[in-house]
Length: 414
Length: 156
Image 1: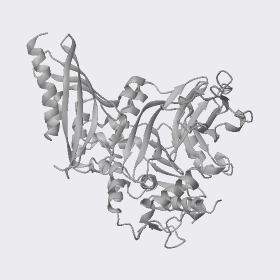
Image 2: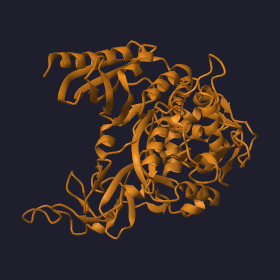
Image 3: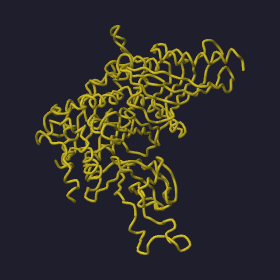
Image 4: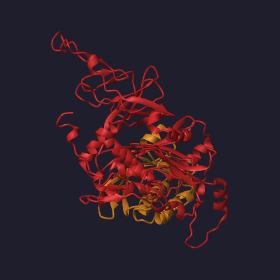
């Protein structure tokens, strides 16, 4: 490390070694943001790249980002998935410009440098010059200029990548519980039902914490309680991996009782409200385990959602200190019939940028961000359910948020 | 083209935008037939044939619920839109149904006066024109961008 390298970068200091006091400056400090890009997104973390179903055929590619770093993901001629930095080795030009495409090779539009689907430099335009003039010096070797490759791993149709040689293999990184949570939801081949991007006016961490925050759900999102959609007692809990970075929360629901209840009971008072068309919550217990909600997060920026029969992947893309793009990918299963597809699409009203139980998450992070502008000394309090980041059989807790900071601090190395 | 039909379609589309922009949202579902289809989606999703949009209603009741939730349940910063609806082109009119296409932009005006271009796109409509008042059988709101700033709660 050079004397001007990252060792010299000073991030935000914490008031203690605990996890329950979170400095506000973490969301506003540009140096901290730079540290995150280097030590988390380019560090020993596995980031979600795309669905395997998006690149089914050799030559298919998608362009995405890990943190803010541009990455291309391809399906090679051998059927294997490759990922590499989406940046020409020559002058640093963006290679794959659109979100997805198809081709036998990747050709830089700027000077025509050509790479195979594994990121290996295969062609340099005018390498030998023109009419014996110019061209690359004889010691130039294409082999020295392959695109930096990422390690890639696939789990139940989700494709992940890491820049790090040190990161453990994906399943070890996630831990057995989280792997189990993924396998439970994505237990058969999926296809995309729709996608959209929600632009959030806040630091990426505020959204990721929000998805780990089981405390806010029934307070900020009043849709279900306003329409007295029976949540019964909804037993559930939080499962957190040993590193703290990943989690899933579950809640159970007696679907049959809910259905009967909603259709039987009349309005109790003038202020009592019912949905005119309750088909958006009409659900089936497709996994046969009574779990109606499972929110699963993978550090540093992916969410796998099962809310009733609404299945979605959400990917968090930081776009600067105070802007985040949230990519929503709504999924169906290849085995779905028309009734099931329509059910999933109707339930889709619950989630996304216009979701009845999610739209508030789009603005609340922005409110926090605004409140912290030049007002970011002090630390927030994250003590619900204790001080540590252990799995718990209840959800009135901030344990998963503390888990996030446990992993975050370990990777930043503060 | 029957002038009356043309005028009726223009009136419906203009009144629809006015209703939303004037915050008379309780009247918004009345612009649709009972068994309607209302979908807000992106050009990319539309072209890919994806069924899942951002807002979807398959009945007038679902539209009523959208407004009830907006008024009583959902939390968001107060704002309004100003719709500018562009040229309205009427395609085929057959069996009492007109196929109509128009363009729109919606400016979002926040409670503090902050204005931004929130959405641009086109309406692909199927309108029942056999009886007054004309109503939407289907209104597809195809957004030119798949990016939505912060949240979408007021219909487009």
